[in-house]
Image 1 (cartoon, rainbow, N blue to C red):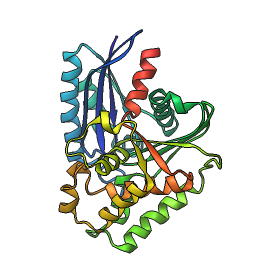
Image 2: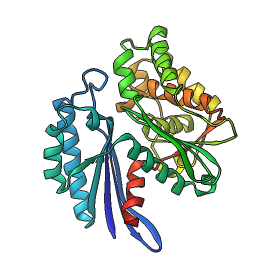
Image 3: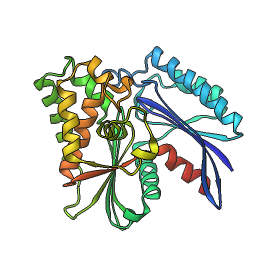
Image 4: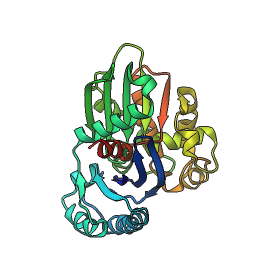
Length: 302
């Protein structure tokens, strides 16, 4: 069976095409494009015309790739489409392009797909105490599980795009702007019951994989190197220090960082650091396999 799963996020639109069988999963194609559909999510939540057009153009490319592989398309949309009062301006043409509707999922389902992808990727840690996080452009999903059973899952209104648009106006960000970002993160995380016991913290999505690639100094992103990398807190702190004192052009030139993510990576990095601190984790196990993988696993089993 050939499947194409598409994740239409606030910041990034991702594609996974794979053949599934009793022998496992064979990846046929993967793509990730920063389309910034949710630009403005920190303001009125409406989708801008440029973001809609960029994302639709990428979906047309993805539909062609899926068709070339004879793969059935399954697409989901997350925070930007949950919030946007004009979501239909995107969803209607997207369905025509893909030949299938984009399912706008709630935060609970997004968290469940994130957890499925993480635990299937790292089964050796899934039987212990695990915190799985997905830091997106508009929201952050947090799942707490023990022995494979979910105790807590929540989608918080914390995202790299959302916090940047709400609080950061200077370049580099001023100390007061950084403080506003971190204060909001701390308030939101107060509601999360992080375990006191030793745990594995698994991080997924573009903020986490970018920080891993930056720590590794990758001049070309390689998912085989990033997936499974252990990002230590000291290395994360080094990247945050660099980001806080750099300008936009300097960030765009940093190895491992997609220039299109350079304006929002600092806010995302602070989300990751605060979660690691709250979870008493000394490192982050990095996953390159986000909710598009969770959706693939789900559809392959149905």
